[in-house]
Structures are given as C-alpha cells and as structure tokens.
Amino acid sequence: MESLKVDIKEVEKFWDARPCNIRHSKKHFGSKEYFDEVEAKRYFVEPHILDFANFKKLNNKKVLEIGCGIGTDATNFARNGAIYTGVELSNESLQVTKKRFAVFGLTGNLVRGNCENLEQTLEIQTFDLIYSFGVLHHTPDISMALQSLKKYCNDKTIIKIMVYATNSYKQKMIDAGLDQPEAQFGCPIAKTYEVSEVNSLLAEAGMKSARIKQAHIFPYQIEPYKENIYLKQPWFENMPDEVFKVLEDNFGWHLLVEAKLK
Image (cartoon, rainbow, N blue to C red):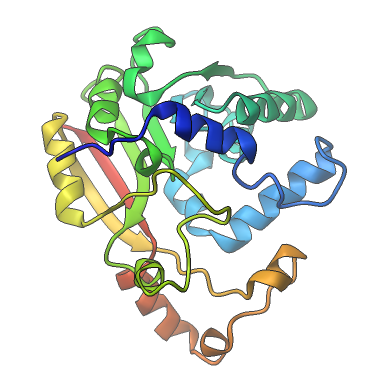
C-alpha cells in the first residue's frame, strides 16, 4: 500500500495551528472548568469512546497512547490508575496536555514524537494497551507507524486504534462536496480505510484484528453545536433511534479496531 507523499512537518504545522478540540469550550482556557467542558462535549458526541477505551479496566496497566492531542483520553487513562505514556507530534497540543495533567494533579510520561519512528524518542518497552484514536489516518505512512508500534508489543498487548471508514455516510458527503474530514479546513492527510485494507495493514505489521466495528455519525447542526447547543439536523431529528443506530453500525465514520500480535 502506497504512503501519501506529504511531509510530516505539514501535519505537525496543521495541528500546531489549531490543536484538535481546542475550541470546545469558551471557559477560561486552561482552567479546570475549561477542561471539564471539553471532556463533556467529546464524550457526549462520541460516547462510543468510553466503551472502546474502557478506562476503568486499566488500573495499574501500562498504556501507550499515540497522538494524545490535548489530553482528554489521556486524563481518563491516568485518573483511572493507568501507568500512562502519551506521545504527540504537535508540541502545541502536548503543552496543553501537560497543563491539563498539572491542573488535575495527574502523573504520566508525556513525550513529543512521531509515530512512524517512535523508537527515536521513546525507549523500547512493552505495554498492556497501545491506543490511538483518530490519529493514524493523519500520518503519511501508516505502515511504518504500525511497524514502529509493534516494537512496543508482546503477545499479551492489546492494540486499539480508530481510523476513518471509507464506506461511511461522512465520506459520501465529502465526495459530494457537502462536508470535509476535519472541522478546520486544509487537513493535509485524512485517509479512509476499508476493513480489508485495515486487515492487510495489520498483517504486514505482524498483527491481526480481533474485532473491527463501525460507529459514529455526527447528527448535529454545526452553528448551534459551536455554542454547545445540540440540535440535530431535521433528517436525523425525525429518525427513530434504532434506525440511526443501524446507520452508525454500518456507515459510521469511525472504524474501531482491536488487534494483537499474530
């Protein structure tokens, strides 16, 4: 599978300019109230993260997160007792996570690094869980990233990653010119994957999937959402919950992948 010809510096510059979810609260930036609101908004809109990450089951487990962003999931790993290491390409994002850990009195190993050559910045060791949510589809060479991550696995390591799904409602809207992959325009890489492609990538890295499922269709009107008002688009507002769930399970934007070494 060919990698995209985008320099990693372009990716770093993009996320430095506006770290993901940085505008999800209008509270005083860096305050406890700010971080609490960012967290509440993330898990309200993407509740499947809570089941997927399973924070409460990770007490005293070694967790490596690839792409910790501004630290929402990182905070929950750490506060639930995980022995946490977070790696982030964007220095701006990483500094927010460090501030967040300080605000909540949490401990963790927060490292700036590139997932394609992680061993250059993080000592090789093994982890109980390697987790990456919405990150690997933004890196130029996902195959290289998975090969690097393999060095931090043993036969008991669980690997959980989320990448964007090609066969999704969101991608069809993007194809029709009615949407874009990220909230901010101009993301240099936002690749999507079929299940078969994910399995091939895992196999090339000496891994195999234990489970892959689809989730998440964003149903809300954008302008009210920016003000923390959750008004659904009319076509979703009038849709029964069980029908919406069927759509998410089959055409969700997120491919939730659980894997392990072969």
